[in-house]
Image (cartoon, rainbow, N blue to C red; front, top):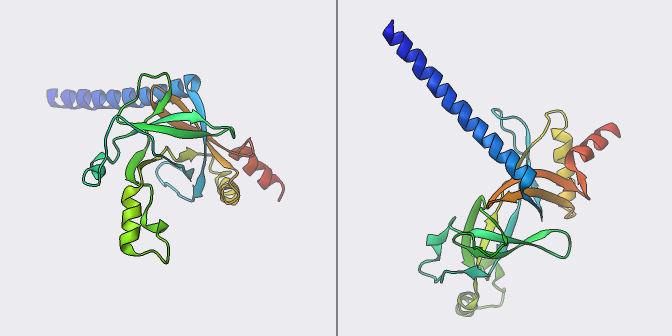
Length: 215
Protein backbone atom coordinates (compact mmCIF):
# COMPACT_ATOMS: atom_id res chain seq x y z
CA UNK A 1 0.00 0.00 0.00
CA UNK A 2 2.76 2.43 0.97
CA UNK A 3 4.58 1.55 -2.24
CA UNK A 4 1.52 2.49 -4.29
CA UNK A 5 1.15 5.76 -2.38
CA UNK A 6 4.80 6.66 -3.00
CA UNK A 7 4.38 5.85 -6.67
CA UNK A 8 1.27 8.02 -6.90
CA UNK A 9 3.02 10.89 -5.15
CA UNK A 10 6.02 10.63 -7.50
CA UNK A 11 3.75 10.69 -10.55
CA UNK A 12 1.85 13.68 -9.16
CA UNK A 13 5.06 15.57 -8.44
CA UNK A 14 6.39 14.83 -11.93
CA UNK A 15 3.17 16.07 -13.52
CA UNK A 16 3.21 19.19 -11.35
CA UNK A 17 6.79 19.95 -12.39
CA UNK A 18 5.92 19.49 -16.07
CA UNK A 19 2.85 21.72 -15.75
CA UNK A 20 4.90 24.37 -13.93
CA UNK A 21 7.54 24.27 -16.67
CA UNK A 22 4.92 24.60 -19.41
CA UNK A 23 3.24 27.43 -17.52
CA UNK A 24 6.57 29.22 -17.15
CA UNK A 25 7.26 28.93 -20.88
CA UNK A 26 3.81 30.25 -21.77
CA UNK A 27 4.14 33.11 -19.28
CA UNK A 28 7.59 33.99 -20.61
CA UNK A 29 6.32 34.02 -24.20
CA UNK A 30 3.32 36.20 -23.34
CA UNK A 31 5.54 38.65 -21.43
CA UNK A 32 7.83 39.04 -24.44
CA UNK A 33 4.87 39.45 -26.81
CA UNK A 34 3.21 42.10 -24.60
CA UNK A 35 6.26 44.08 -23.56
CA UNK A 36 8.95 43.36 -26.15
CA UNK A 37 10.22 45.52 -29.00
CA UNK A 38 8.78 44.59 -32.38
CA UNK A 39 11.33 43.85 -35.11
CA UNK A 40 10.85 42.70 -38.71
CA UNK A 41 13.00 40.84 -41.23
CA UNK A 42 12.52 39.59 -44.77
CA UNK A 43 11.91 35.87 -44.79
CA UNK A 44 11.78 32.86 -47.12
CA UNK A 45 9.50 29.82 -46.93
CA UNK A 46 9.69 26.10 -46.24
CA UNK A 47 6.93 23.50 -46.15
CA UNK A 48 7.16 21.42 -42.96
CA UNK A 49 4.64 19.29 -41.10
CA UNK A 50 5.00 18.14 -37.52
CA UNK A 51 2.57 15.27 -36.72
CA UNK A 52 3.05 15.79 -32.98
CA UNK A 53 2.63 19.55 -32.80
CA UNK A 54 0.39 20.29 -35.76
CA UNK A 55 0.72 22.36 -38.89
CA UNK A 56 3.03 25.33 -38.93
CA UNK A 57 4.71 27.73 -41.32
CA UNK A 58 8.47 27.70 -41.37
CA UNK A 59 10.50 30.64 -42.54
CA UNK A 60 14.18 31.29 -43.13
CA UNK A 61 15.52 34.51 -41.64
CA UNK A 62 19.27 34.96 -42.08
CA UNK A 63 21.09 38.22 -41.36
CA UNK A 64 24.84 38.99 -41.33
CA UNK A 65 27.17 41.71 -40.13
CA UNK A 66 30.92 42.41 -40.04
CA UNK A 67 30.82 44.68 -36.98
CA UNK A 68 32.12 42.24 -34.35
CA UNK A 69 32.51 43.73 -30.87
CA UNK A 70 34.94 42.65 -28.17
CA UNK A 71 36.65 39.66 -29.82
CA UNK A 72 39.51 39.21 -32.27
CA UNK A 73 38.94 36.50 -34.84
CA UNK A 74 41.61 34.70 -36.84
CA UNK A 75 41.61 31.86 -39.35
CA UNK A 76 42.82 29.42 -36.71
CA UNK A 77 40.14 30.19 -34.11
CA UNK A 78 36.98 31.53 -35.73
CA UNK A 79 35.20 28.15 -35.82
CA UNK A 80 35.34 28.05 -32.01
CA UNK A 81 32.80 30.87 -31.91
CA UNK A 82 29.94 29.07 -33.64
CA UNK A 83 26.67 29.75 -31.78
CA UNK A 84 28.48 32.05 -29.35
CA UNK A 85 27.27 35.43 -30.62
CA UNK A 86 24.28 37.61 -29.89
CA UNK A 87 23.00 40.26 -32.30
CA UNK A 88 22.37 43.97 -31.89
CA UNK A 89 19.26 44.87 -33.89
CA UNK A 90 18.56 48.29 -35.37
CA UNK A 91 15.76 49.62 -37.61
CA UNK A 92 16.58 50.25 -41.25
CA UNK A 93 15.20 53.00 -43.46
CA UNK A 94 12.81 50.61 -45.24
CA UNK A 95 10.73 49.76 -42.16
CA UNK A 96 12.57 46.51 -41.58
CA UNK A 97 15.42 45.82 -39.16
CA UNK A 98 19.03 44.78 -39.58
CA UNK A 99 21.83 43.24 -37.53
CA UNK A 100 24.13 46.15 -36.67
CA UNK A 101 26.68 44.35 -34.48
CA UNK A 102 27.68 40.99 -33.05
CA UNK A 103 29.10 40.36 -29.58
CA UNK A 104 29.61 37.45 -27.22
CA UNK A 105 27.06 38.90 -24.79
CA UNK A 106 24.53 41.74 -24.83
CA UNK A 107 26.16 45.11 -24.31
CA UNK A 108 24.92 47.70 -21.83
CA UNK A 109 24.39 50.32 -24.53
CA UNK A 110 20.63 50.69 -24.53
CA UNK A 111 20.32 48.79 -27.80
CA UNK A 112 18.06 45.88 -28.73
CA UNK A 113 20.12 42.70 -28.34
CA UNK A 114 18.77 39.26 -29.28
CA UNK A 115 19.95 35.69 -28.78
CA UNK A 116 19.63 34.00 -32.20
CA UNK A 117 18.62 30.45 -33.01
CA UNK A 118 22.15 29.98 -34.36
CA UNK A 119 25.20 31.94 -35.40
CA UNK A 120 28.29 31.08 -37.40
CA UNK A 121 31.43 32.91 -38.49
CA UNK A 122 33.10 32.98 -41.88
CA UNK A 123 35.07 35.28 -44.12
CA UNK A 124 33.00 37.86 -45.97
CA UNK A 125 34.40 36.51 -49.24
CA UNK A 126 33.53 32.82 -49.64
CA UNK A 127 34.31 30.23 -52.29
CA UNK A 128 31.09 31.10 -54.10
CA UNK A 129 32.59 34.55 -54.74
CA UNK A 130 35.56 33.26 -56.71
CA UNK A 131 35.73 34.67 -60.22
CA UNK A 132 35.94 32.22 -63.10
CA UNK A 133 39.22 33.74 -64.32
CA UNK A 134 40.73 34.07 -60.84
CA UNK A 135 43.61 31.81 -59.83
CA UNK A 136 43.43 29.87 -56.59
CA UNK A 137 46.29 31.88 -55.10
CA UNK A 138 44.76 35.22 -56.04
CA UNK A 139 41.38 34.21 -54.68
CA UNK A 140 42.83 32.93 -51.40
CA UNK A 141 44.69 36.21 -50.98
CA UNK A 142 41.48 38.16 -51.54
CA UNK A 143 39.50 35.87 -49.24
CA UNK A 144 41.90 36.08 -46.31
CA UNK A 145 42.06 39.86 -46.67
CA UNK A 146 38.27 40.14 -46.32
CA UNK A 147 36.78 40.75 -42.86
CA UNK A 148 35.00 38.09 -40.87
CA UNK A 149 31.24 38.20 -40.71
CA UNK A 150 28.75 36.63 -38.32
CA UNK A 151 25.59 35.21 -39.83
CA UNK A 152 22.54 34.79 -37.60
CA UNK A 153 19.35 32.80 -37.95
CA UNK A 154 16.26 33.61 -35.90
CA UNK A 155 13.18 31.64 -34.75
CA UNK A 156 11.49 30.21 -37.81
CA UNK A 157 8.24 28.49 -36.84
CA UNK A 158 4.75 29.95 -36.72
CA UNK A 159 1.91 27.58 -35.84
CA UNK A 160 -1.35 28.19 -37.67
CA UNK A 161 -4.80 26.67 -37.88
CA UNK A 162 -4.85 23.34 -39.72
CA UNK A 163 -7.59 24.56 -42.04
CA UNK A 164 -5.76 27.62 -43.34
CA UNK A 165 -2.23 26.18 -43.25
CA UNK A 166 -2.11 24.85 -46.84
CA UNK A 167 -3.33 28.15 -48.28
CA UNK A 168 -0.95 30.09 -46.02
CA UNK A 169 1.96 27.99 -47.25
CA UNK A 170 1.04 28.70 -50.88
CA UNK A 171 0.77 32.44 -50.24
CA UNK A 172 4.06 32.46 -48.35
CA UNK A 173 5.88 30.67 -51.17
CA UNK A 174 4.48 33.03 -53.78
CA UNK A 175 5.36 36.15 -51.81
CA UNK A 176 8.87 35.19 -50.73
CA UNK A 177 9.90 34.96 -54.37
CA UNK A 178 8.95 38.62 -54.74
CA UNK A 179 10.51 39.65 -51.42
CA UNK A 180 7.17 40.67 -49.89
CA UNK A 181 7.08 38.26 -46.94
CA UNK A 182 8.16 39.61 -43.57
CA UNK A 183 8.72 37.72 -40.31
CA UNK A 184 7.56 39.66 -37.26
CA UNK A 185 9.25 39.21 -33.87
CA UNK A 186 9.20 40.60 -30.36
CA UNK A 187 12.41 41.02 -28.35
CA UNK A 188 12.72 41.55 -24.60
CA UNK A 189 15.75 40.98 -22.40
CA UNK A 190 17.64 39.49 -25.38
CA UNK A 191 14.95 36.82 -25.83
CA UNK A 192 13.28 36.82 -29.26
CA UNK A 193 10.03 35.10 -30.32
CA UNK A 194 8.17 35.01 -33.61
CA UNK A 195 4.70 36.52 -33.43
CA UNK A 196 3.59 36.53 -37.04
CA UNK A 197 4.29 36.63 -40.76
CA UNK A 198 3.03 39.46 -42.92
CA UNK A 199 2.62 39.95 -46.65
CA UNK A 200 2.34 43.55 -47.82
CA UNK A 201 1.49 44.56 -44.26
CA UNK A 202 -1.27 41.97 -43.85
CA UNK A 203 -1.26 38.87 -41.68
CA UNK A 204 -0.42 35.68 -43.58
CA UNK A 205 -3.54 34.10 -42.06
CA UNK A 206 -5.74 36.89 -43.42
CA UNK A 207 -4.11 36.52 -46.83
CA UNK A 208 -4.69 32.77 -46.75
CA UNK A 209 -8.37 33.19 -45.85
CA UNK A 210 -8.83 35.68 -48.71
CA UNK A 211 -7.20 33.20 -51.08
CA UNK A 212 -9.52 30.45 -49.87
CA UNK A 213 -12.66 32.59 -50.20
CA UNK A 214 -11.78 33.67 -53.74
CA UNK A 215 -11.86 30.08 -55.04
